[in-house]
Image 1 (cartoon, rainbow over the protein chains, first blue to last red):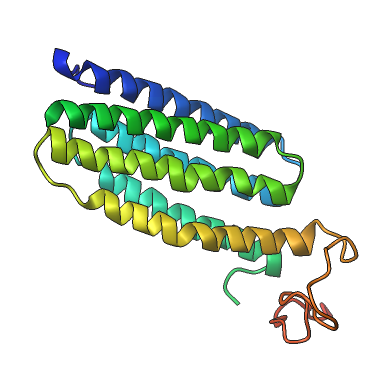
Image 2 (tube, rainbow over the protein chains, first blue to last red):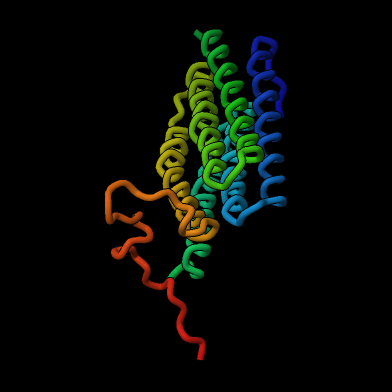
Length: 98
Length: 130
């Protein structure tokens, strides 16, 4: 990531704090994916991971000051939603497209 | 103007990170599957929402370039989050709960829509493999 000018130090610290928070949240969700009491919890944890990755991509976009990460974040949002609905549908019906 | 925008962006980033941590911690610590649905919804709405507003404020207030991509992502997330929650809770009801443990619906003679006579059950009965 590019270094900020001195007057941007506040945003620089906030960016690192938020990245640390979302990284810790990703690790907690990964724990829930691996050690999970029910199948629906795994799906929910995967959905939460995609949402956290969207936020992390947007934060990296703020740190770099470029808008090139928004397409990736949008793709994560769409693919994460389709994947979650597909998994849940498969659990309910044993089939995705009937 | 720029200093105010910087303070607001930093505050929104910190708030969003805090909500993400709370949501993930709830996903790990809450006792059963239905309560565990509550935690990540906070991360999905408040956490990501705060980060997206921070990004819009940063590009508009600090960089001086208005940016509307984030609004698109936020709208998409806010529209899809209830649908995934509904699907996951329905899968929970059908998979991990005994039918007698589910609380009764209000009113006599009623049943929850996903179990009642008019429920859409097409495809749930397995064809005879022979």
